[in-house]
Image 1 (cartoon, rainbow, N blue to C red):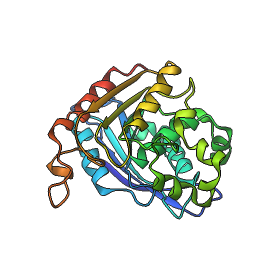
Image 2: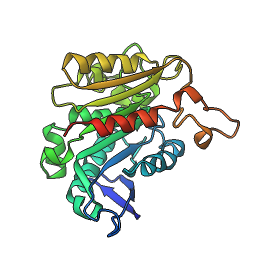
Image 3: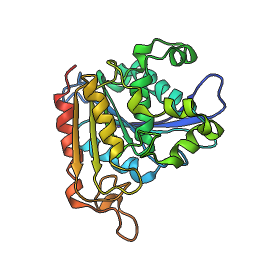
Image 4: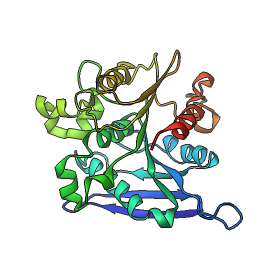
Amino acid sequence: MIYKNIKINVDGHEETADLYTYILDNSIEMNPERKRPVIVICPGGGYTKTSDREAEPVAMQYLAKGYHAVILRYSVAPARYPVALLQLAETLAYLRKNAEEFHIDTEKIILLGFSAGAHLAASLGVFWKKDFIAETLHTDAEMMRPNGMILSYPVITSGEFAHKGSFECLLGEECNDEEKRKEQSLEYQVTEDTPPTFLWHTVTDDCVPVENSLLFLEALRRHRIPVEMHLYPAGGHGLSLANDETSYQDGGCIQPECQSWVELSCVWIKNLKK
């Protein structure tokens, strides 16, 4: 295992993110030239924190399936857009630059976000070719390109079905600017360059309404982006793995019928075309 805590710094910004790597090292006994997909985990937390429940326990699941995993503890409020986006973009550039050391299949760098962390992941998915990102990071846009996205009960829209707190923390006073707020409403930002996407949500989510995923699904289909979506009939927000491992102390957030999403996402990754 290659375990590192890497500081992610962006020129012109004081904030620092922490990147934790869980890299499966190669062995002469088991295909020493193996390249594996890497899952880049962005925990949720409404842009006020990065949740422990959506971090290491999730990484362990993907490690057990034979994937590398990294966790990005990105900057949250009072940090404002685009700090976290730039940190995530820098993370992908770092992984590509160090792909040989980390045995990474550079055609399968997959973003995995939860709630507001899924908004961050999807933001890079739709914005990765924006000139300001490459110019700020002094690198080519292809270095920041995600090959796929797994979005778990994502914050997407700033409109009728918005999780308002996420946008208030992300934008601060600019949240009152209709144009700025709409820019962060990601159903309007999908292009033909958006990567293939795996979505899952519960119909009964009373915090981030399921319409967030449905609006993004519609936008992806309109632009002919490959997409797989799973809707579960029951369950609240923030389920994470939906099992004992990520339950609250009182037993909350256990939803057996939702636990299949990890296995389904692994099948999707395996079938993802390069």
